[in-house]
Image 1 (spheres, rainbow, N blue to C red):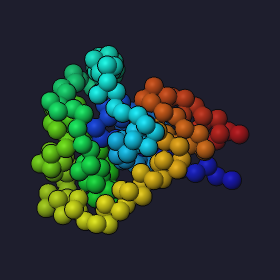
Image 2 (image 1 turned 90 degrees about the vertical axis):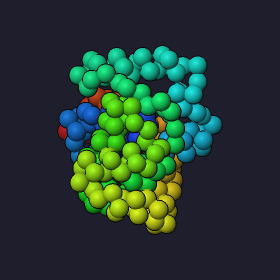
Image 3 (image 1 turned 135 degrees about the vertical axis):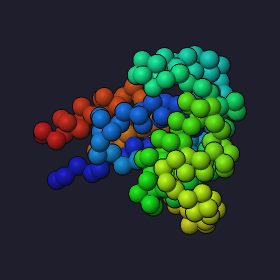
Length: 196
């Protein structure tokens, strides 16, 4: 029996999701990208973003160190981080329908964490789309579409049903690998399963 396609659940406002997204193509190239609302996952599990806790400074320093170590450049934090990722998550579904989720998501997260742009602002989201060839008018209309809103709700429900409680998480073969630092474990698990 073949292995289901691994699902890469990530949030555009999550720096650890960005760090994972920059290398998942090398580690788990077959993964299907799924942009979710991190706040929905946190709320369902009685949690909050570490960016709103006493661990904020330590978490930011850790992300900066990882980005530097991987040659991604210095992180430039958005002034309002963390803020709402609702608009960018809806835009991700518009991009996915065009077959452009991966480049759109990377463009959006690079805007946030390398340029300090606020992904809660529609103009920032439209700029991410422009950078990967998505018409700004098409993207703005799509974000407001009721079907996109419903699809995002269903996507978050899927993540919760699988047990996802934070981002990034790779769901593979009934196992969940949470965190940028567990991508290698996920890749090894998938290699082992392929050989079994």
